Amino acid sequence: MADRHELAGFLRSRRGRVAPENAGPGGGARRQVAGLRREEVAQLAGISVEYYQRLEQGRAAHPSPEVLDAIAAALRLDDVEREHLRSLALAVRERPLPAPGSRAEDVRPDLVRMLHLIHTPAMVIDDRFGVLAANAVAARLFSLEGSRQRPNLARRLFLDPAGQDFYVEWEEMAALTAGQLRVTRGLYPRDTELAELIGELHDGSEAFRGLWSARDVSVRTHGVKSFRHPALGTVTFAYEHFIPTGDSRQRLAVLVPVEGGTTEAAVRLPATWARTPDIPRTVLG
Image 1 (cartoon, rainbow, N blue to C red):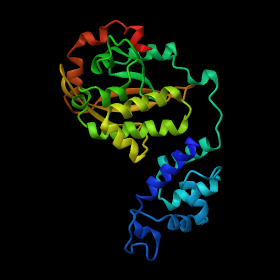
Image 2: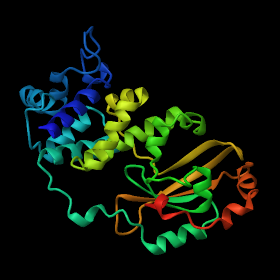
Image 3: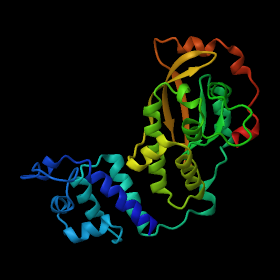
Image 4: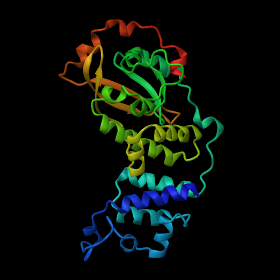
């Protein structure tokens, strides 16, 4: 039933964001609700109002792929939102629990070795933003040394008072992080560790509560980030995320100084970073 409510809540949130004029003739008439009415979505999707209403009330199960595509078109969902809608519908169909070995959090030794051969910040994170492995430069940049438990970038972003100052584009990062956690929640609704993390962020951060209630979803695989570091000042990196073969829940994140800026020189300045011994296993998990 919880999965049905996730699907219902997402549909309601997306319906409220569609401009009424997109409902066709009369869609822009005076109304008391934001976005489209239920009957307008049903008409645009070519399904019965009763069935769509049941979907939004969490009382309908097993929507077909054709119905989902029609609803996605009516709500003008982007590619990430469409995939999230499909994930939520699959969860409603009681997707089986993951196999015991499918949540492996150990990083392949060759991948760890690769991290330490990269001279810019690089780390392996999971889809809960837990840091599974990091090279010396990343460990220093993100202050990962000495952690008694596996570091989590989402926890640091929302719950660490220093997080808001460290991330120059904090609002954007916060929205993207909440959106990516929402995608992961849709894919793995029975992941108890993920549920505990979301609960912790929800209880401890007003900003996260607001973003989570919006039900936005996002997937960002590349872009630009800036950080304020006490030793280096403001540094800016282009980043890329790669999915290692064999574990779709891990990401290899590599940060490269932006071309033509001062970040490259700043990162090279503390040459001892590249010669720092491997991070303790307690940090890598």
